[in-house]
Amino acid sequence: MTGRSSLAPALWLSQEEIADLTSRVKPAAQRRALDRMGIGYRVRPDGRPLVLVEQIQPDARRRPVGGEPNWDALDRLQDRERA
Image (cartoon, rainbow, N blue to C red; front, top):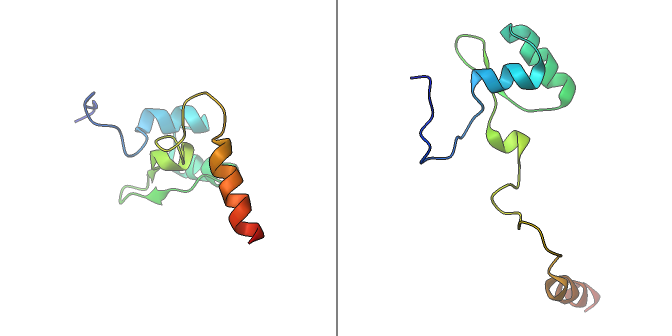
């Protein structure tokens, strides 16, 4: 199975995405490039790196899109720290 379902978000990068990210084709070279970039990964039984999407987009699901910070929440946090 090479394709992805458009209904479910991907948990890890595809081999093509890892090759694009690292500009490397060979698994050992991809791992070295990921190490240099500080991107965490696991090694699959075949030696290829397995990169979780969270390694590239750690807060993508929790981050609000656009707009300003929640100033009221930040003020409350500062008030608690002062108390």
